[in-house]
Picture 1 (cartoon, rainbow, N blue to C red):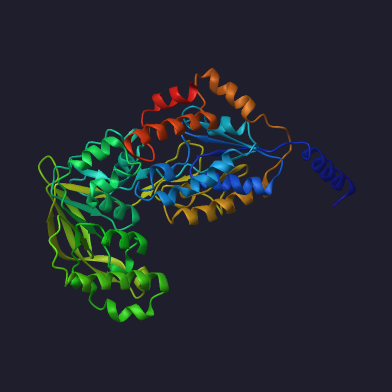
Picture 2: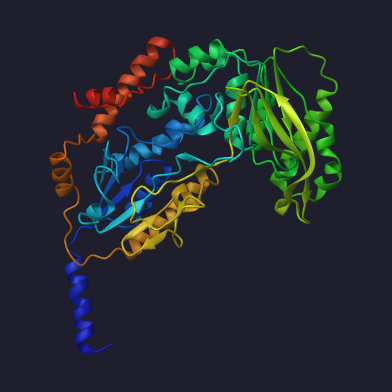
Length: 461
């Protein structure tokens, strides 16, 4: 390097030492908070603004975790500490892509990190998918968890049989909510309107359907064990689904081995279970959805009978053998996964996979991404944390400090001119306090407020 080049580099380093990095994180869910935590760890003198579309933070932890799993929500304690760091601001009720473009956002910050999650459903693309009472898992979970745009879900629980297509943890959550005693749900933060509806539910049998076999089921052992222990509920397995499985068990990796052993044990125990229960759980494998049948509302689901092809069980695919089975039901849930949306046309996006195109969290100069919007909807909060840490660390390493950026100072002026009411963390705490007070009166941890205008009014008071 020439003397002039060395001098220029030194001048840049000296000037950058006086510049406070202004970072914008779009999305206040687990990925957004964990990435922020890593940025704070990597850069002492920094300002991080976490922008969220809703007036309330925490994303999937608030709106995705099942109400009867409060222990999973303990991560909120960590997020609360991050949000109250003097270097961090929570800015709710700002819809990036509508209230402000990504280009405009970049004019105020040294770097932008997109962590807004996966909020759309994958579709089955089969006949009858638009029949009444064919319900998106995403919408149902949002309905009982208080997601504002799903509070008016049109669902009829006046049916005896419900079928869930998919065998992930979300599918298990739905089955458990439908089969749980109402007195158990009353003690959770489930929304009152969904609790009222579930208290009148006539759903007695729940079918959990997977395209592939028991060795490919994607629910966790903890989720399955909890469902198998439900009060006044009996599990009915199809033993034919497990042909040859016992011989493979010794060769399985420990997590898959334990899960498979639990299923085999449950099959054995159910053969001696003579209880007469009000509720029934029917997990079935090697069946793929072909068509929803019914005149106006779903009445039956047509399933293909499948067999597995491929040498290694993890890579085996399901192929129809040309035979079919119909299951009678008045309610069907599609739980086959989520995908993200392209909230701004300038974001490089893979529409097929539903995620932002990136390399280890980097999208392009000054633009990064983490969480499900970056990876697709895979893993649990722990894997999201690891991914967010990686993206946050990369951003902190690469952020360019060539000039001062205005950050929140100019952002708030821009948004106020457009009449956008920004909800800060103090405003969220007012909402939080009100929800907890309402919950106390009902004997619950909290009663979630689902009307956005009411949230804004409480936060602004």
